[in-house]
Length: 114
Length: 115
Image (cartoon, rainbow over all chains, first blue to last red; front, side):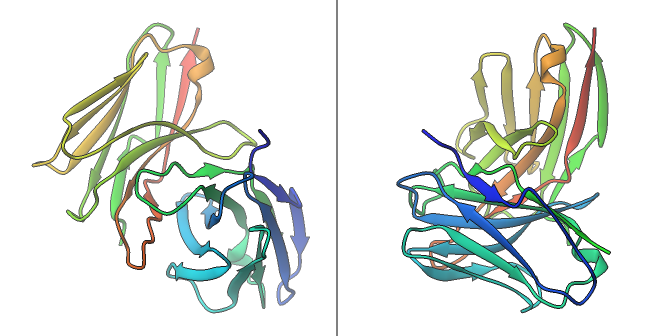
């Protein structure tokens, strides 16, 4: 069974540009979470998509947005990039909602903003 | 506001020794406590998890100890091996509304097991 995949693996942008990150969940998983892993800050929850809808978002500004497609893959968009947006962006998928559902993480996209 | 505090930041253990990583949480609404292991260049992977109605859970060389009254939980790695060298994250989860169970993570502990 293929795991969660993310693309691209690395992305270099300049301040003010937009970045688009993509995530394909494990087959059969309908729920996708996005996390930001910035240096020294651990992983912080960004967004949750389930059945094509944004269900919850973390404490991040509106320039962080995304969507989930009918095939349950997801896209994270970061507009007006700032230097502090440089981080590893991880997505995780689960079969369904529920606190016992294991979140399976992809390898991440490393975003560097210059 | 950091809701899950993890210590130490880094840990060096000799092969065969016991590695201990501690976490403390503030929000009593948390009801699920997983530990994740992350190798360089990889995403975190679930190692072991515990619910608050259990004081200890063991899976192979990995044990979670949970103290509900102290709002603390810890990961013990027995007979630590060089292959255990990785970054370990504790996390906590609760229903954040609308069925959302996002994880709140500690900042991580970088474990190095030396031969």
